[in-house]
Length: 384
Image (cartoon, rainbow, N blue to C red; front, side, top):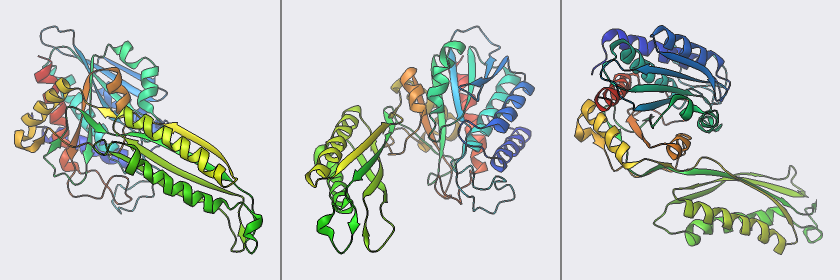
């Protein structure tokens, strides 16, 4: 299936409109309203709004032989708190907000596929198009699930794609196992005793303590986890003091841990707690630790990964589909959906553009027809 010129022009216009008016997390009122209006205009059998606070769901039933199988396809809707620096004619009109991860393109792709499927009905079974808020840190997928998404619409399998800068347009990549990491966060507040910098012996210097804590945290990756099970642990923020001649009374450390397995995830959390709680005490300082688990690992199901890979191969050829992609340490809340139902997640080439979450990033419109064709191929071939 190759989208015709009218469909491609429409998808491009939708994408650039979404890009022009980015919205964050669950506060995607304009975006969700536009999506819902378009879905109704396509003649979907059902369009539901407010799922998971601000998600939109459309149901399209096939017109060929009856079948009970129902699959879900997800697109994310939210943008990022980034000041855009592209200079494009359709650049963000919301200062400090931008679609720097390509969710504008993901929405346009799914809308294009839905318009085609609703017009042709050349498949059996049912397709549920899921437009999800708050992927960028809000866990919108989990909220939609808690709102009964899968049970209400009878979803048995679920699929999603994400664009990937650095991969050529016309290529796809996935695996039949773990694709993305779990993402956890921690805050460590070290409470010492402040004083004059000329009399350090009268203080408990939390900066010295923090240095030891940061160094010890790096040994978790080097010495506490299996080197064959990748882990990333980064301290990304240190805040302490304001003056040259004052030793502060506290230091606040912030950081993230990324893991691919639950075994390493448990080990990292345990070691962070031990290091953060006991090293400060050796110096006479106190500590407050807040360790928060975020998105779990994104793990594809082998059968569904094969199905999705086959659909991609029908679009771009088997040689352009990498089926054994090594996992990367970014995180994605589609992981919650894959824990609840069989399914698969695939990367789609965005070309040699700026990286994701960069002020100069833009979704590559040349990828739109390939994404639309992927979903149409998945539905029309696998649902017959």
